[in-house]
Length: 157
Image 1 (cartoon, rainbow, N blue to C red):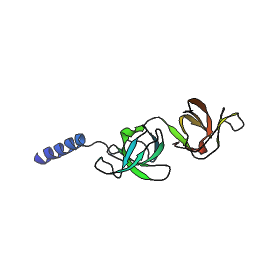
Image 2: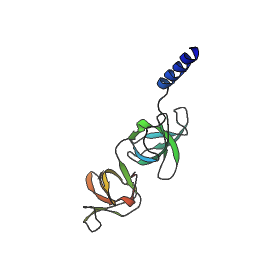
Image 3: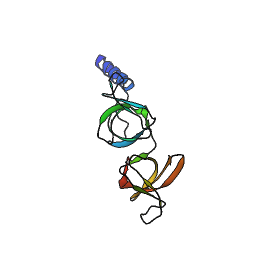
Image 4: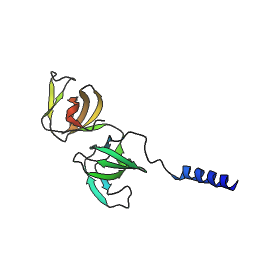
């Protein structure tokens, strides 16, 4: 009886004491920074020193690992660091990978070109189908909405 009671208490307390280690979402996956100032750390806790300060709201990064509410992320340069999951948005954002990329009116290369976009411009992604993603952004107080080839975007799962 004592062994049964000890085992029951052990399993009961451990179920309440631990937060699941994983979100259940696939790894690796893209997420985006929620604000324009995000500290990332050497390890998965505020006790670890700050490694990077990212100052680019909605910049996409790749989650490569999770540990008790912390995401280990890799940026477009391949640098790894840790940040708490509260620093990321659930919306899909993508960044243009190279210069002079066409933003099309429709999802085809024969469509009217609305703008030429340079490396680093971040778009909110509405949806992706086949080779194109429908995207939108504000740039110099001007709204842009159209289609970009998916292969030209960093941040698409």
